[in-house]
Length: 471
Image (cartoon, rainbow, N blue to C red):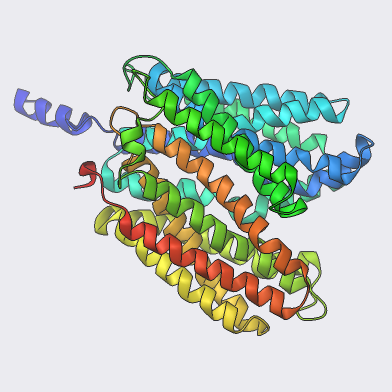
């Protein structure tokens, strides 16, 4: 074999672009899918087991609801801290730490003798939400731009809860073996993911950011996120002018002001203030929060409540309602999300985001005009499966990675991820009082509010300016 031919084959096996190709790329994607599934099972598989947890641990259902609320709150905080920390310690090491935290939390949940220990375990599990942000960044750093789009769509589809199948399996396991059986499954998946990351994830070649982690800024931002979360939940339950709500609002503003003050004085901030003011950054977060506040609230709350209302709605039971209005958009999103990523990589991420939001707006307007026509509502929810679960969620996650500052590649993905949780909570808190009125007028007003918030999301998407790296 000639030296020329050997050189050609060597070049084909080791492309000069520094990206993974062929079997190595497939192995990495499979590993990251396993890592995000290990986290996602904690989010969607547990819900059917809440009543069994309450019975087994001898607590009421209100107390056990913290199993979910604290999990998602820890996810908002832990995602920001652990993802940004990986800029300094390396992606592979960061993901291994995240999966290690997940495994420790799962063991605590598995053996928990009381609710307190269970909640500690759930907080540790929630902090592992950084698995998603780290996986997105690893994909961007390891794959070509075109392959990144499609594979990010695959991970986004996983984030939708695998079409609701994991929740169904969680119910079956709980009925047969009790809630602890779920944590056995989650532990096995988590350990398998940890081993695969150790073997298949690219080795850390150095820090992505110089300097050291801004723990003071991280602490201030965490307090702000915690305050904002409790402000939203308290405002929705006790009223937006209640003393506790106002106190939480003031505390939240103080924490965010402190965060800005700290960031201006740090050599290596969590994210520089000039970036937060940039059209390349803040519109990404704003669009995510507004979209989740509108479309998520319609799919996962308003329409579900309407479908089960026996007076002005469709009078369905919980199982039928979920089958009709929750499963279809999730299943459609499984197919639409990878296609959306593929399309965005070729046409443009911001363009596809705007198209998705405009389609969402149209579907929400139709639902609002015909809320009592079951087949129209069902059809529009299916449209949202393509537009929201596919186009919007995929591009929102992708832009969180692609628009992030070069010196802090994990900063925007982590903040954008927190925006998902904040937006979902805020949207439901805003429309819940109107939905609770029970009349068709209340449902209609709630839907019009969601339409208005979607318009705001579209406006912020048009303010968004592409980062130079996308050119």
